Length: 89
Image 1 (cartoon, helix red, strand yellow):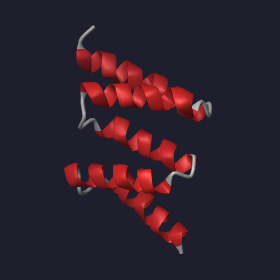
Image 2 (cartoon, helix red, strand yellow):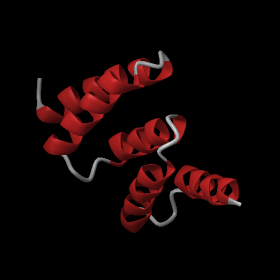
Image 3 (cartoon, one colour):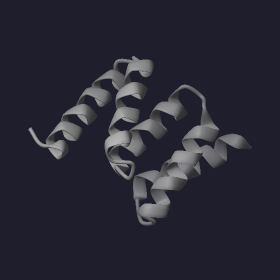
């Protein structure tokens, strides 16, 4: 199994953990992915969702900004950023 396949498998595991509300384990796996590939937008995006879900909005915003630096046209991330900004007021 190559690194890319391994990362895809880890992302799938993290998604399952995230949607099962096992946030600590999901966070560990997402951070492990980012050690292997610090620019992995999929891992960053799901880490942002995780932080948003556990009300760590500043961390989520940092992650989303990092994604938009790499991919300024990322529609889903723009929508999540907008939602976070609206929640502040």
